[in-house]
Image (cartoon, rainbow, N blue to C red; front, side, top):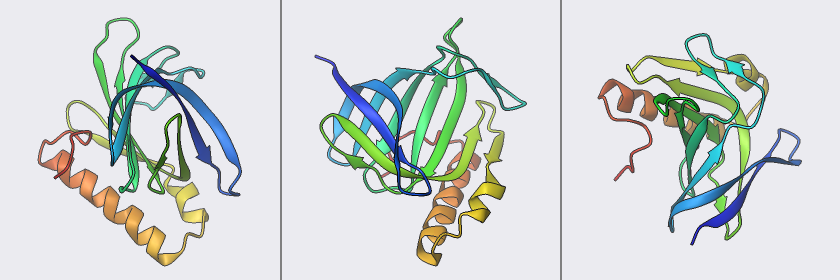
Length: 157
């Protein structure tokens, strides 16, 4: 039986913001995988466009400084790539996932090309040194996985 869940992100002021509703397709103590659809206006990243109703699976981790979207085209079902959103490790509860959004994202294309987004906004957040170091270490980890041709959504260790 599928379990509906709501994704909440805290903005830079700490205010909770609803992001989307999804359905749990896999749950473990340290992560939860949700199935959902992109419900915003089209978003052009230059190399690829996210379109309304594109399907995605997002993995939230309770102990890692990122979550990972696996994105599929609404028309042909092809994998568009992986969108890695950097945030405080998620609080995974029964019917919701919550994390602070840190305004740094990495997009990984199926051919291995990567694009880092929101770098300027990330710099302006004024994060504490430990948080900044943790996020940048997570970014390096993901980029190393891409270089080794390991999709970033695979379970690590």
